[in-house]
Structures are given as structure tokens and as C-alpha cells.
Image (cartoon, rainbow, N blue to C red):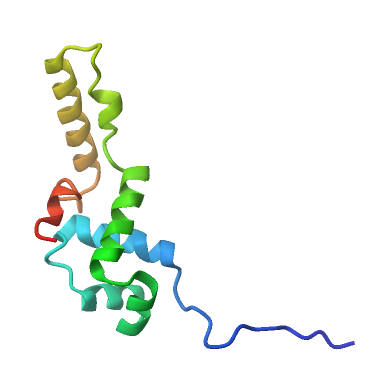
Length: 120
């Protein structure tokens, strides 16, 4: 008995978009948005520019997805640290300490991913 395997038209995707977003996050975090080109991204993902634009629309579209991932996984939880029931000075100290802890733990992170975006 022979089993038929159905395939969708075209070549199968050669990259995982979620992995690409993670890779882009590391690139943007270490070099800044402005310093990372589409050529840098396509080389890191192992895809060509048309595939990049089909997957993400634009560099800004990818960056938006990176920021969403960052907010969900890596961003400093400002809402938890900046609370009305705590003294302002204590809140600010906690934010700075958390930032220092995170940046010291990741030698490639040069600061805040969001403010590192500069000119969009």
C-alpha cells in the first residue's frame, strides 16, 4: 500500500519566523536599529530579501514584532517596579538595579532595546 504525502505549492519555508525574530532582537540589541541593515538580517536568517519582505513586510515591521517579543519576555517590568504604594526613590532605585542586573548578565546588550531604536 502506498501513502501519498500532500504538499503545499512552492518550496517549504527554510526558516522559523519566531527564531528569526529572536535573532533580530539580539542584532538590534547589540548594534541598534539604525546599524542593522536588511542585508544583515537576511544573512543572519539565511533567506533572501523577497522572503524577508514576504515574512515581515519591512525592517520596521520586523522591529515591531521584536519589540512585542521583548515586552513579553525581556523588558524590565516597570509596572511592577513603579507603584503608587512605594516611595518614588525606592521605585527608581529598583528600576536602575534591575537594569544593571540585566545588562550585566548579557554582554551583547548595550542598553535599552526600545531607546536603542533611535530614528525609525
